[in-house]
Amino acid sequence: MPNREQVGATALVVAAGVGARAGFDVPKQFALLAGRSLLGHTLDALSRSSDIGRILVVIDENERPRYDAAVRNVSKLASPVFGGATRQDSVLNGLRALAADHPPLVMIHDAARPFVTQDLIERLVGAARRSGAAVPVLPIVDTIKRLDGDRSIATVERNGLAVVQTPQVFSLDTILRAHEDAADSGITGLTDDAAALERLGIAVTAVEGDLGNVKLTTAADFQRAEARLQPNVEVRVGQGFDVHAFAEGGDLVLCGVPLPFEKGLVGHSDADVALHALTDAILGALAEGDIGAHFPPTDPTWKDARSNRFLEDAVRRIDARKGRLVHCDLTLICEAPKITPHRDAMRRRVAEICGISPERVSIKATTSERLGFTGRGEGIAAMACATVELARRNDERR
Ligand code: MG
Image (cartoon, rainbow, N blue to C red; front, side, top):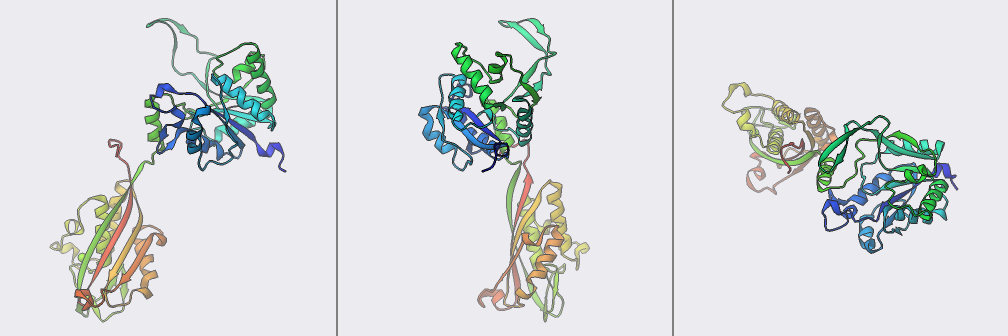
C-alpha cells in the first residue's frame, strides 16, 4: 500500500450552493461552460494533479441526477455527501465523512473555481505538509474604500491586507476540530475555512495565489471563462480540383516528383496537376481565390514554372494568417502511370514543400474504370482536400 505522503491530499469540493447570482435556471456549478458543467471542469483540473489522491464532492441532496451527469469521466471520485444550509455546514459534513478514512491533508475547494492550476495545488500541498495549513493569497492592487450607502467615507489602509482564494489545504485533524468548535460555539457564516482556524489562534501559511484562479459568480464571469476555454483557432477545409491533358513526350511531374512515363502533361507551368489541386484546396480553405487568379496562365512569369512555387505561396498565405496546414488529402485519377510505387516519394515531397510531416499528407490513386477522358488515357485529374487551422479573429464570436 502506498503511504499517505505519496497518496497526497484528499480534495473536498463544495458544490451544494444555489449560485443564484449567475442567473441560470440550474445551480451555477451545473451550468454549462464550453459544453461541460462548471463542476466537471473544476473536478477535471483537480483529478489531473498527482498531489490529489481522492475527491469528495458535497452536493445538495436534490441535485444527485445533475451531479451524476456532471461527473461522468471524472476519476478519483468518492461517493458524494450531502451539504447543509450554509457553506460552513456543507464543509463540516464533508470533513466528517472524510474522518473515517483519515487522510492526513484535505484540500477544500469551491466548485466555482475551474481554473485551479497544477502549480498552485503543488505549492499549497507542499506548504501544508510543512505547516499544517496553507491558503493562496493575492495582493490588493486597487485602493479600498469604506462606503456609507453610495458615499465613500474612508480609505482603508491596504498594507497588510490580501485577497484569499481556494483551494485551501489543511491537516484534516486540525480543520475538522476547528469546524466542530465553530459549530459548537454557534458561529455561522464563515466564508472560508482558514477563518475557523484563525478564531482558535492557529496560524495559517499564506502562499502566493494565482490571478487566473478566478471564482465564477456572474453571467459575465461565465462569458469570460467560456472565451478562455474555447480553443482560439478555427478549423477550415478547402477543396481543389484540376485536370491536365497528356501529350506525347514531355516530362511528367506529379506531386513534385518526376515520373518515368512515355507521356507528359501539358500546361503553361510544369502541369503538376496534383500540386495545382492542392494549391487550390489551400486557397479554398483561406477563401483567397484560386490558383488562376494568383498565377494567371497568361503571365509569362509562370511559363514552365515548377508548381512547388504555387503551393509554397499558398502555404505562406496560411502563415500570414497565423494558421497551420493540419492535413492534406490528394486523389489522383488516371489509368496510368501506376501511382503506388511512387506514393512515399510523393508524400515526402509534398510534406517538404508544405513544411509539415509526411504523416499529415495522404496520397491516393484510382482509375475511372476506363470511362471518360481519364479512362481513355487522355489526361490526369486530381482532387485535393486541405484542412487548415486559423487563429480565430477577436472581432467575431463565431
Ligand atoms: Mg492546372
